Length: 337
Image 1 (cartoon, rainbow, N blue to C red):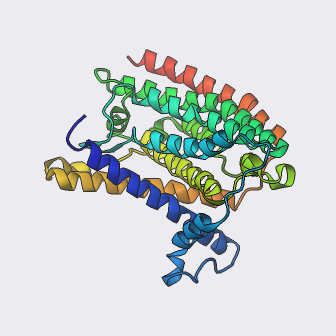
Image 2: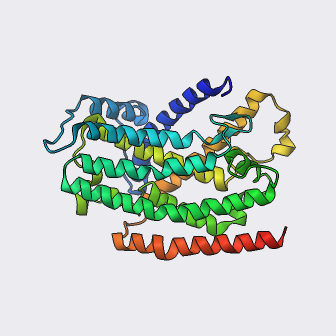
Image 3: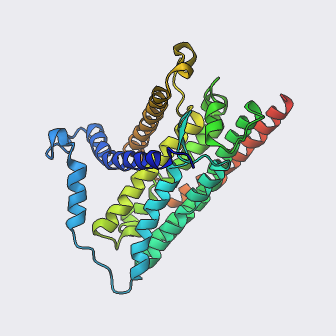
């Protein structure tokens, strides 16, 4: 653990929470533009204080608990969701010389944290003591488990490319994955893996057209039906944290992460450490925000699928496509050794 660990972790959490808060405002503004509306514009200049007003509203609302609910577990479920959302982002390299964790199994840790989301969803639905919430939690858990397999094939294809391009480096390190893209972003050389990963990421983040965790027409409100006040707010924040995490992972795995254009021509490697970090963090944030916008754009463009269509796409389309892509890529790389 280096001397920059706690300052870096603290700064990352502040930025993460701020981005999650203002992602809610951004989504409302983007949806208003797409639907030819005005959107929030009353609280603060141009509505910029709307997230603060929303937090104050949630803090002052009554936090009720149904009689048949499991009190302690109902309190623990939203806390678990937020903690898992924060734990996933901590593995990403912020720049060439700035990262929170320096472990050699970063990708395995990341997959472990992402796979634990199913526990938060299922626990939230079961602890509420409501049939609607339970059905919502079970359905969301089935969705997450199903698309984790396709997501894994997309990540495995990235690990293969990293091991081929940097044979002397550990491919499980997210920083090595970024460094392997200095001569070309992975979405250019692995378009099928990129497509599989992005579609699976939409389902993993419960974003439209795969937002079945909140299918009001069928489940009233999904796994968080019986949650109110700041507990509901915690689920809301966790959802947008997962959105930012998914966007940051796409930017890191397929779009070069902290790498910017013309680094060799600009001589970025000769800059001071501070400006190298500013350069890397800035480009990572720009790419992440672009994908946050894409997630929101898709939400207000495509209609929600039926649940059977969701499962069919995951098991009969994405998973076979990901396995075929992984097998073909392994064969091509083996022949080019």
